[in-house]
Image (cartoon, rainbow, N blue to C red; front, side, top):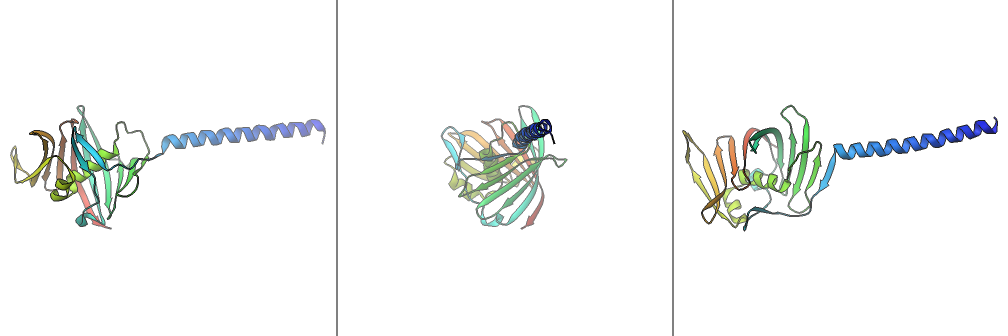
Length: 212
């Protein structure tokens, strides 16, 4: 083997190593864009309005070791977006997996009373604020007494209130100095949450509920 051949082989090996390094960098970049794993700082106090907060708390006993599949329709800025959510409750955690109605994964969340929340985001979801996602789940699913002790706003619950021609199972209202901040209405297996100050509405329809 001549020295020219040896030199060509060495150059080829170096070029191959360089290409491999570039491919690894591109692959890591693509993976980081496709799957963003975010660890959020520990915070369980959510601001609902100036001076009004909700302290996020552990799942109530009645929900622990339960899993729900829900259709969530969010209305914001005149647009309606739908997603399917699978939610699991343990004694200290909420696990949420969100996907499009056709089954494409959007994000998943592991929220804990004791640890930082961890989010895996598979596609860009503008304006996603996990604190409000967890807060909305609690406004809908938690017992009234637990929520009442977790907020410093005026919080009440009424049963059998009529909305148009339909009577609700119950209606929850959060206010401050007579101004309505948030309402939640329950109709059988459907909930409608309206956050008047943040100007959005969420309709949650329970599809299934099973024990873990």
